[in-house]
Structure formats: C-alpha cells, structure tokens
Length: 302
Length: 177
Image (tube, rainbow over all chains, first blue to last red; front, top):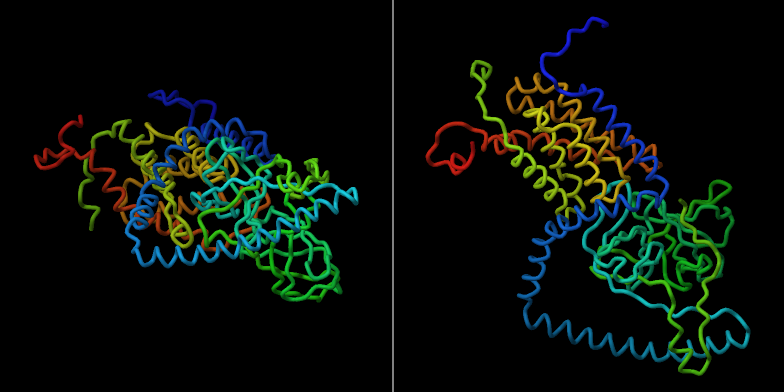
C-alpha cells in the first residue's frame, strides 16, 4: 500500500475519490432541500437552463394540439357553441341568485360583526405537463410569479379543489395535487358539519380521513367541502366524496374519491392571494371587506 | 462467435458531440410523457451518460453526471440531489467497469447496462424512501428494461460520427476530424 508506484499519466483524483466528492455534495443538497425554501436561489438558477428546454420539448405536442384544433369540423363547433351558450345562460341565472345571496350574506355578517368572507381573484392557468416524479403527484402550469402566483395558493377547477401551488418560477409553477402524500386539506362534511382533515393517499388517487372515531357520523357518499379554517382554501369548495368506510379499529379508515381531477381539463384556476375588496359588498353599500385572512396556520404536513 | 471479430477502431468523440447528445437526452426526457408511456420511458440522459462513461471515460465523468442530475432534478420537481446522486453512482460504476463492458457485444453490453440502470433507479428509490416517500410499485423499474433494450441501437447511433471509414456516401465523413 505504502509503496504504490507513481502513475504514468496524470488523471487527477481517482474515480472513487471523485465519486465520494459528488455523492457527498448530493447528500448535502438533499438534506438541505428536504427543508423547503432553503435552495430557492439554486432552483431559480437551474430553472433558467431547464425552462427553455422544457418549452422546446413541449412545442411539438402543442403544435399537434393546435393543428388538430384547427381542423375541427364546423358542425362540432356549432354543437359545442350551442351547448356552451345554454350552459352560460344557466350559470348566469345561478350567478344572479348568488350575487343577491352574497350581498345578503355580507350584510348579515356585518350585522353579526363576523369577519367578511374574502372575494377571490383568480388566474386561469393551463396545465403544461404532468409531473414526472413518480414519488409525488404534481402538475406544472404555465402561470408563475409574473402573474402574481405565490406558493401556498389553492388551485381549483370547475368541480372542486385540485391542489395547492408549492413552487413558483417566473413563468410556471408547480401544483401539488390533493392526492399527494404530503398534502392535506381541512374539510367539512356537508351533511352534518363535522370537521376533519383529508390527507392525500399517495399512489391510488384517493384521499383519506384519518383521526375519525370508529363511530363517527359519516356515510358512504357524504360530500366533503373545504371548511376554510386553515385560511388557505376558501370555505365551501367541493373536495371529495366518501367512498369506503372501515370501522374495525379505534379509528375508522375512511377513503374518499376527489371530486376534481386534472385529467379532464387543461385549464384550472389559481386563487391568488390579496383579496380585492368585495365588489359585491360595495354594490350593496356594505362597506369594504376587511380582507384580513383567518389566522389559522395552513395545514401542510411539512 | 462474435469474439473472433476484431473490435472496430473508433475515432475519439468530439466534446461538442458529447454535449450535444447530453442535451438531446435531456430534451427527450423533458417531452411531455405521462401515464403508461412515462413508466416505460427510458432515461435518455442516463443512457447518454453511461454510453460516454463507457466509451470515453476520460472526457465525461461524474462531474457531467452530477450536473445533468441536478438539471433532471429541477425538471422533474424532485428533491435536488436525487438524480445527481444516482447518476454519479451509475457513472462511477460504469467507469470502473468500462474496460470490461467494452469487450462484450452490444447485446451483452445491454445486460450490463441493465444492471447499471437498476442500480441507478435503486439509488433514487432509496434516497426518496429516506426522504419519506412511499414505494410507487414495481412499475418503477420498467424504464430500466426499455433503457437496456435501447442500448444496442443507441450505441450504433452514437458511434456513427466516430466511424473512420472513408465512405463517400456518409454525411458524417465530411466536417469531422
């Protein structure tokens, strides 16, 4: 060992030494990155390299989508247009009712001295691609910090809650779906108002409600809406429907199927922070929504 | 037996070509794969890195693997360092074994590459399990099979520019030194 002959050629450090160096570097990075937000600058730097490549890689699929969109038949368009017109009519009728109710609600809340519910501002974001990491359930959308998207904001579609923005880059952001293992959303059973927290299950696209007693009043088919107590998700958005209950142990094992999904649409809405003062409340002469958020810290598990 | 055939002498690959293939591999990985296609998608970056680690261990190595790994981490939204560690490990194994692997025929090489890719996936799996993720099922290793199956055609393709035969029809005979 001691009398190793000097090498004929200079190759720099041995492969093993190099490997040790890079492995150590990777482990340090992983340890740092496991605590969120410590490596944001490094991520921003890397995103400068990756983002244009990503755009290039998405270009062919996008082009195919556009060309096939161009060759849609007129009959198809007409049908769709008619259907959308009808839907629009229906929705605007509902919206009128809702506006009246919202005004009334704001008034009643004011009388009661209860905090105003916030009016939401939204950004329409398009899904660029589904996350490729097999260990987590994420999607990437095309709106980022340049459109006021911030980490922590909830994302919804026309049916219910989709997930939460977890990472933001200038022109894109990453939304962790509700079914991700690390994702949690506070919910309320619509039927009886019981509150619970729904956690993502990770693999099979379901949610579960842990910490519910075996004799809890919950049935198959119960709808779960956001309760709004976390201050992240506004109250009253559909989250999931209870699909299976096992009451064998002290805690019931409750499985739920999420209402919203990302497989049906390409667009979703991100509810962006600072609530505008509610226009509806203004109309009704109710003064301003104070806009302060509920203090309850949000409930992500890491 | 194939062993009787003398191994073809190849010109050294140019650095530019190596970087080009790594970039192309990254681009292929970034295509919008999803669902079943995603679990079958071979890791093109890993294949390119392994190819160059076996062919030209002096020119590329663990530094390149580490940087490509960081870029893949970023692109996949994984934990930073996950791909970097796995790529470095696989390339290290490839560099240690490169003389041995070069002696085999392409299909036999593919078996070696299969093992290297399995090592790579296992390293990623382990680092994620330590970070608290759940095992995503045995389908996680499918991409190693497709990757290994892709090895022979990919090797032929990547060796094309290094072929030295004066072939007047070849587009590669011009411009390369």
